Image (cartoon, rainbow, N blue to C red):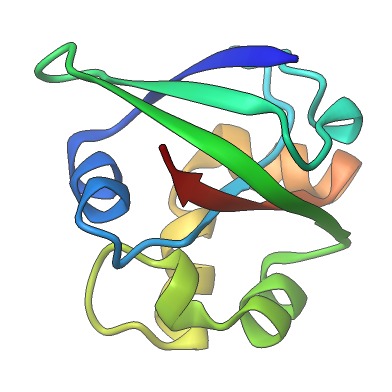
Length: 118
């Protein structure tokens, strides 16, 4: 399957630069992407919501976690976060600052999507 997802400028650049290897996503009122249906080999086209630049990646894995802390600990916060410091505590604060994400994670957990640049 092919998916198209909007993404903020900083994580877009980190994926493009190869420093962000895992994208964390959850269902929100604004994003109904069926993350539980993603499979290795699927492709995602990220669209930078500032520049409209596109970046195509291949899904290498999809892991589901009940909360951000567990995802960051298991996948490595350095592989997920695009901002400094790349600590578990900073990551939790970062995800919790997005109200729709905080609520979505409570209800649906969070998906760690492994990314491979194409």
